[in-house]
Amino acid sequence: MRKQTNLDRDPLGTVQPLSLNVVAGGAGFIGSHLCRALLDRGESVLCLDNLQTSRPSNLRALEGQPRFRFLRHDITQPLPSDLLRLAPRITRVWNLACPASPPQYQRDPEHTMLTNVVGTNHLLRLAETAKARFLLTSTSEVYGDPEIHPQAEDYRGNVSCTGPRACYDEGKRAAESLAFDYARMGRAQVRVARIFNTYGPNMDPGDGRVVSNLICQALRGDELTVYGDGSQTRSFCYVSDMVAGLMALMEAEIDGLEPVNLGNPAEMTVNELLGHVIALTGTRAPVVHRPLPVDDPRRRRPDISRARALLDWAPKVPLAEGLEATCAWFAAELAAEPAAAGAAG
Figure 1 (cartoon, rainbow, N blue to C red):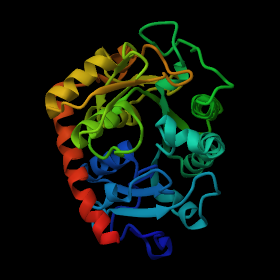
Figure 2 (cartoon, helix red, strand yellow):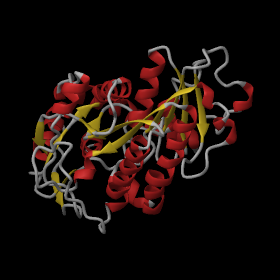
Figure 3 (cartoon, rainbow, N blue to C red):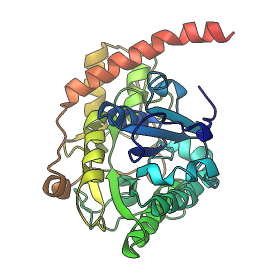
Figure 4 (cartoon, rainbow, N blue to C red):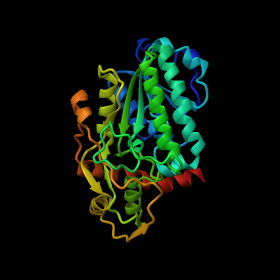
């Protein structure tokens, strides 16, 4: 993994000069899939990532491509002058730069908040300078522990501004405010996606989210951890569907002054998800229950009427198909762990 690209040497080579996507957080779970999809569409990508929680292995298959470059950078810091000089070539700025799982974003809450606020502002200024379109990946967490079900974009949420999740929840709400203020002032073309639970290959096996937790525990033969009684609900969207929604939103000719929910409206309990994982893996490991985390939402299901109307978008991948692909990917990753540990030693 290159730590830094020498942008002075025309990093995009012979690619058309006005076709550059800057993807912040591009080494992360969803970001790496987005980079791949943009490259498959024939576009050029400059991935920014500090690798704090992202996995460099997510980019391994992309690094040799002539239209892809990686720049290690933390967006809480001012953007490098070399990058700013590329502004005339930048047409799209994608902000996916923030840990999304509670254990990760709570590990350094100050950095999480600054990534959402200071980092978003840096990227908005880049989009303004470049006259590029800007997309913020916000989150269903802006709805908190919702009192309205399902959650539509006009619901203002039930968020604790003092709890351990506030660095992420309130950080994303502040990032949205910044983005919409830039849009209202005519400083940038803005798109805001509120992402609901997403799963698929390239997830970090140790990120602490329910899908990765249960699948990895089942594959290892470990106890299966369920927080609370398992009756809380989530709506799981496969990553290819999510990336298709993000790309459709970025290209949509809309005013951009309203957020758009992206997620799968098929709601299920954590216990139902557990049943699917057990059936797929054949595990006989016992299930253990742990206390429900503070401010953990009891129900979550997106109203995607706006996405259907504006983007003609809805998820296509059935849960059974998506979980099978995800299990197969995790199985390969976990099988490689002993070899990687041996090589490191």
